[in-house]
Every structure is written in structure tokens, then in C-alpha cells.
Length: 473
Image 1 (cartoon, rainbow, N blue to C red):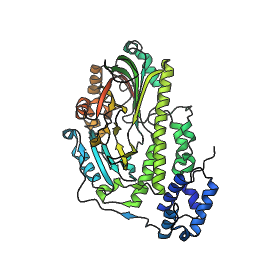
Image 2: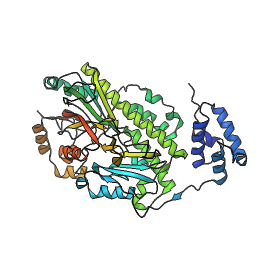
Image 3: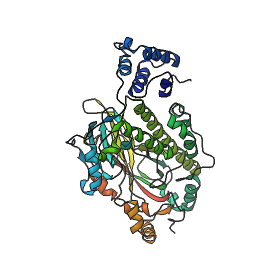
Image 4: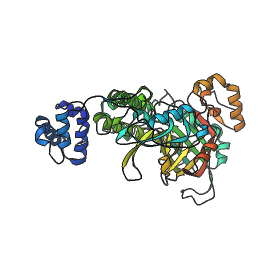
């Protein structure tokens, strides 16, 4: 079916000026003239462009005409509020001052309407990792983050833990043969319907990234991304899960939108900083108005990147299932580094940024991992409004990558892994278990946010890097 949705490029081609008016026009046409042909819409816009004064009082089209006449200034200068809005912090004693300072600044933005800081928080760019920020009709690219739509995905199989012990070498080979990390990609990537999305052709930056998205699909990023076999333990209680109590073999993966997400973040952050000028300490929190062309483009690009990240995980798990010869009993998936359109307590629409934070609305299932030697948790959200329906996305770092490489030794890390019974393929000192907070303390701080439904114990972990680094006999 031919798309009837117009793009900013098409509006510029008929003479529309750069600025908010293009976003306004696209929004009105999609909402009020949905289903009308492109020809009809373009002819209508051409008439408004030629005689905007005739449409100033039009019931639907007046905002377009008024903006064409008034023409907004291209750059807006903003100051921070002198007082910050209040927000809830979970596990304050375990959060570094830099992260708290970043949250304090974010809560002074003139667009901010709410916020919360999760127990795994640490310093990032703009909004801290573990920061949750609600704004009104605006989106902050660095409030979402660079790895857009990064997520967890867990598949539970009808295989006992004994299978893992008996077939450990086979499972290691499955991981090596069926996963790619960092710059490595599959020689023959699997196709996916996500690559046929119209947005790849309608938005210029996405068009330049389509080939890279095709090459990288089904692979994982570097850093803290992983695919691992482990044991899921479902306790004996009525929990609503479609899996009986017991212990099962499971696969857990963590990765995001690869190079595409990073490029989208950089591109739209540059635009945001050009359009929304803020004091130096808040410059990474520049936003895009969702009524503008750039804001609407970013929202579409962010959504596509999140769906692409999900497609990568699904292909990873399809490869795992095929190699195992098993279909999953249950798959649980959740994402972070994203922005959602939600409602506040009064029913008003807000934009909730969760940068390194898990959605935890009432009944929402998710996974909160620990480290490669500590458990992860299948959780169900409790819908706590003070946290903006959010929870931590993991344990959170207590040691920077640089410090880890300077202070840890390979021998000590391997000894720690061996003691914990973990087989590690890949990784480096910067992802050693000791660089992370105690996941049990983090979970203790968020008992009001989530209910634990099951526990995942990692056993064979595959990460980016030298394939022989972490192999433990």
C-alpha cells in the first residue's frame, strides 16, 4: 500500500520555510486529514502557503497559516529555573554525587514536570543513567541516550538445569556460532520486516543508516552487552506466569539499536542544541518540541531504533532456539533508553524519559539483571507514581571503565569467575563483576516498585572481546 504520509522534505520542496511550521503542518495533516492522498494534501498546503491570511480563522488549518505569517525565531534561549522540582531518589547512599548533580540540573529545566532517580544510578551525559524525567510535549535526545531502545530479552525453555551441566561445551559453541558483538556481523544477515519501514525512505538520516542497519541486524553491541545461558528459578507461588514453578534452562540477552541508534542520538542532539540554547551545565539536556518537524522526526526515528533493537534480540533468540531444537515456553522483554507518551495523575499527557530505567507500570513484566556472577530478576511492576512507574535497569556501576582497567587484574577476575562457577567467553576487565553494585541491595531499595516473579542465575556468558579471555576450566 502506498504511503499517504507527507515528509518535511516534501513540504520544503513546495516552498515551506524551515522551522516549527513544518512540524505543525505534518501533525495537523496526519491527525485531521489521515487517509487523504498526498496530492490532495500538497495542493491544500500550496494554497495556504500562497494566501495564509485567508486561513487565519480556519477551524483546522489556522495554526499553519498563523505560523507562516508570524515565522518563529530559529533559536530559543532558555535559563534554568532557580528552584528545582522535587523528586524521589531510591538508594541515595549508593549513588555518586555526579549523578545526583545531573538530576538536580534536569529538575530545573523549564520543561520538566516530574522525575525520579533509580537505585542503580550513576553519572552519564545530560540525564544520569538511572534517571527518569517527565516533560511536557518535548523530547530530550540525551535524556533518551545514545543506545536507543537498549533492552533485555529472556527466553525460558522446557529443559532442566541438568542439560546445561551435561552439554556445557555444546552450549558454548552455540553462543560462539550464533552471536556477534561489536564490529563483528553475520556474513549473511537474516532479513526482517523492520528494514522495510517507510521511515527509512522518509527521513534523511535514517536513509543513510539503512545499509548499516541491514549489516548489523541480529548482532549485539560491545561494552556491557551480552548473551548468556543460565537457570531460571520460578518459585512455588501463584504468580500469573504461564510457566509452572521449577527450574529451567534460559537465554538472557542485553543489547540495543547498534550503530543506528548512536547516529540518531548524535544527529538530533546537534539539532536540539542549535535550536534550544541552555546554560553550559545543562547543554546536553537540549530538547526538541514535538510540534516541530525535528521533534516529530526524532520521535519516529527513536521508535524505529527501538523496534530495530527488538528485532535484533528476536533474531538472537531465534538462532538460540533453532540450535537448541526447542521453542521457548515464555519470552519476557523490556527496554530502557527510550521516551514514552504517558499520563500524569491528572490525566495530562507527559513525555517520560527512562535513561537506564525499566518501565514498571502496574503488571508490566521485565528483567533486571545483576552481573555475570550475580542473579537477575524477573519482575512485575507495581505502578508506583513516585518513581513515574519505573525501576532500575540493572545493578549499576560503582567503578568506571578506566578505573577497572587500572586496578583489576585478569587473574583476580578469573579466580572470582571460577569460584562463582561462571564460564565467560569474551569481555574485558571493564565488565568484571566487581565493577557493579550489589544487585540485592539495589532490589531492596525498590521493593515498592516491583515484585520479584523469578530469578535468573547466569552460567555461560558471551560478551564482546577476546574469545579466550574469560574461558574457565
